[in-house]
Length: 136
Image (cartoon, rainbow, N blue to C red; front, side, top):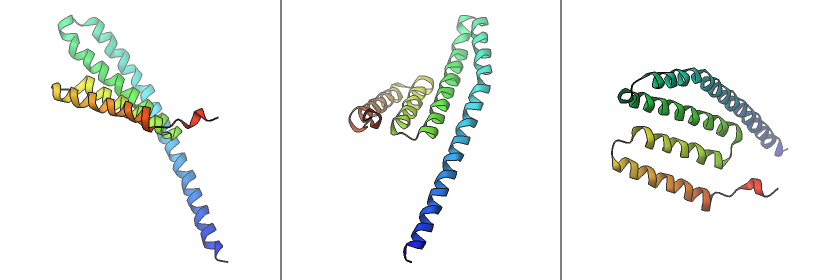
C-alpha cells in the first residue's frame, strides 16, 4: 500500500520528463529553422563585402563574422538541447567565448580573459570531462 503514492510520483516525474524533452526538441527545431532563414543574410553580407571598397569592408566583414558565429552558436545550442551531453555544453561555451573574443573584444584585457576562459574550457574537457561514448 505504501508504494502506491511513490509509484504515482515516479510516473508523474517520467511524464514531465518526456514533455520537457519534447519541448527541448521543439525549441531546437525552431533554432535550426531560424538559422536556416538567416543564411540569406550571410549571403547578402558576403555580396556586400565583395562590392564594397577595402576601407569600408572591415566593418561589414566584422558584422559577417558576428552573424556567422552567432548562427554557429545557435546550431551548437540546438545540438546540446537534443543530445544532453556535457561535451555539447562545453562546445557551446567554447563557441560563445570565441565569438565574444573575435567580435567584441575592446582591449587586451578582454582578450586575456577570453584566452583564460578558453584554456579553462579545454582543461575541463581534457581532465574533468569523461567521454562515456568510448565505453561501448
